[in-house]
Length: 193
Picture: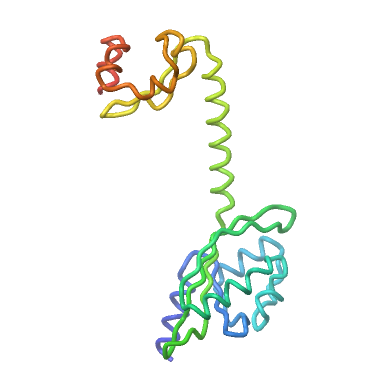
């Protein structure tokens, strides 16, 4: 009884959505974070005792196969899922962890982390980088991005290639000495700081 309370207290303290299923794929318990998260998504909170695929019919059919694999192999399974829900796409990182008793998987703890905002931010950053790169590529003056130490050129636009009479890819292969040879000494000292 005491270990069961510790188990429940631990699940309740974790700041991710969590539920536990049995070998029939029925949801035995869920932490308050899951309930609160589902409520924000307008998903029914009437899921205890139901099979995962009945409680959450919007999940892909492959979910049962994933659970079956965890029950059969006893290995943790982690994946990223994209689900259309409440008129928007939700991206989750889901980990299914086997609970083993007497060398047999008897339950699976599922931890669901909503990573939608992170994925949107990553995509916005990639889009911004692509726009910046396109702008710099079209710039008529030579531009290079130098990182280090040790110094290396991670980007060079075509205009710099024309100034140096080499291809931009060749510029990115420049050695420290070659980099020093094409940068004004005042600027070079600034780069080293």
